[in-house]
Image (cartoon, rainbow, N blue to C red):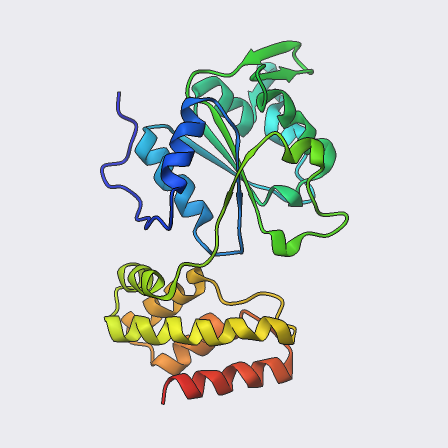
Length: 263
């Protein structure tokens, strides 16, 4: 049975990442996607799940994510105590692609439960029930993270990193980014070009202390506002510049670049 939605998620490949992912899936290899925020990692996973005809279970990682949140827990109900599978266990049972977004945000004691699924064993021990669950055919573990956020206490251990095949992502070249913004934002080519030009200029401010540069995702948000009738400057201020910083001088520099771009 084909589990794909009728229409493919829009994804414009930037290299050989589609073929690499397909080979990893066929050979039961776990995959790590590395790249800045908003550069298309999540959309890529959605597209590959569609292309491979596999269900996709996505988990947003955070500091409070526990092993029980992934694997499952006992719940007390009217009929007594019942076991409820967590999202990782559901993916293992059903042969889904399990995508852990921003894996470094999770605690290390949570991440280690993934280890038996990333080597030849492909098993998930469930200590609370005593079950050792073998991954169903089609199961694949995919994680993502933003190397720009790496810190001493927010990084993957080498013992974890080396269990994954790494695919590097970055913002698309200008012409391809224009294609994406025009298609996803529903605006004219000239407007998409102006947004991409602005992003290219704003990204140079990283050397001046801008922690996060504008992502393709932010450009699409601005494009959708423009397409709905919001004036271009207002859309850019609200969707691109304001989310990036609260620092007065940096905001002033970004607005100067906005004015220079829209002349």
